[in-house]
Amino acid sequence: MQKNPLVKPFLKWAGGKRQLLPEILKYLPKNIGKTTYFEPFLGGGALLFELQPKKAIVNDSNGELINCYRVIKDNVEELIEILKDHKTSNSKEYYDYLRERDRFKKDYLKFSEAEKAARIIYLNKTCYNGLFRVNSKGYFNVPFGRYKNPNILDEAVLRGVNDYLNQNTVKFLNTDFAKAVKDAKKDDFIYFDPPYDPVSNTASFTGYDINGFNQNEQRRLKQVVDELTEKGCHVMLSNSATEFISDLYKDYKDTTKIVSATRSINSNAVKRGKINEVLVLNYDPKP
Image (cartoon, helix red, strand yellow):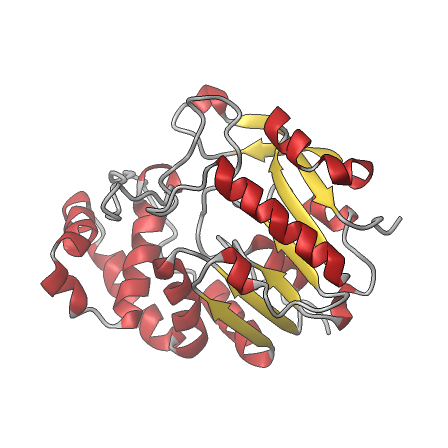
């Protein structure tokens, strides 16, 4: 099946993999199109949309994000109409008003699923540095970005994603990463893109959702990778090239690849740029 170039991420997401895609694509397993694709940390969906598999089970712990995907699949025209209103009304005052709605539960509970999705897309497109971040209470807390012409509504991309999701079998989950892969079978391909192990004490990005992903979670993820390996699944995992991660995945050192990626989201512009990451594989990649 020919891929649709309009099927691409509709959000800018912390840790998004667009910059790393050329490296990931080099090391994919063979016969990937004949099995089920799993992605337990979906985020912006860069690899899902690049591969456009016919059968996929994808997951994210962020319920607001998964709601966006479901609305694009099931109700894209209503979403587009709401985003048209947001685009017309865009201002710092309007942004602040929409951002604060989740603080007022009675207001927020009245929102339809499409209204919730449109709110997240609007905030993502207009907030400072396109950074999705919530505070300890789970409230979106990024200030207004003051862009001259933010791309609040990209109808072609939204409809392209809608077409892909409806022409293929893509199941969306909002659960724990281990549960998301429990049905994986031999030769299925699983791509793990967890919150990265911080490269320094100040580098940790903890605001992706209200649940922290610490080293104990990284160890639990390693156990899941081992279990999938025993099943005969093909697993690829990306993470930062820290000593902790290198030691954790030493069993896979013969097939681990060091790659260079561009980090575009950082509050300090000086710290944006090339950084080493690892791709941990449990298979010999195709040449």
